[in-house]
Image 1 (spheres, helix red, strand yellow):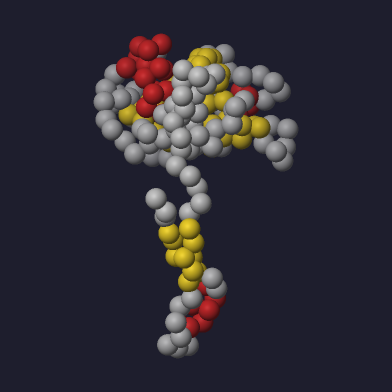
Image 2 (cartoon, helix red, strand yellow):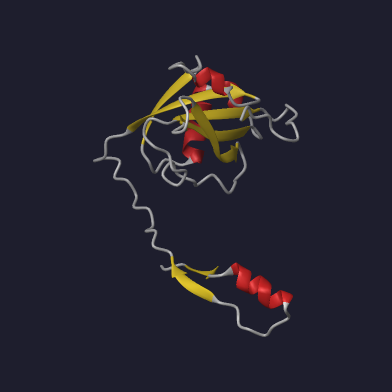
Length: 172
């Protein structure tokens, strides 16, 4: 299925035409989305990858925890595939973390990856799931989140009885 989007060629012309109250047509172009739909991974024939997951209650780990070749102590190693969803990873975390099984527990997922501009790491939020509720990020895959083999996953687990800050505290 082809996706089309209207992309303005020259936004300043549009602004200029409105500013002058001109009746000139707005220029736009139809662009075909060239991305192919994800092909499902044959999990019987494809070797899984190692996903190194670090969970913390209430907030993400500090980026200092990932510096100088160190990682946080509470590592969970998951062998999975690039088509694994955030919901699937949530289920695996709940299997080993009893306090995360409660309905209404939030899981905030972030990728931790090497920073190409400096010797440290960077963190990028990729989605949120909630136990017992469906959400828009449930079906997001590692591939869609632009996960690269070797990246870490940092998960902030917020139990339902805990008050979440207005701006969820993030060290980045």
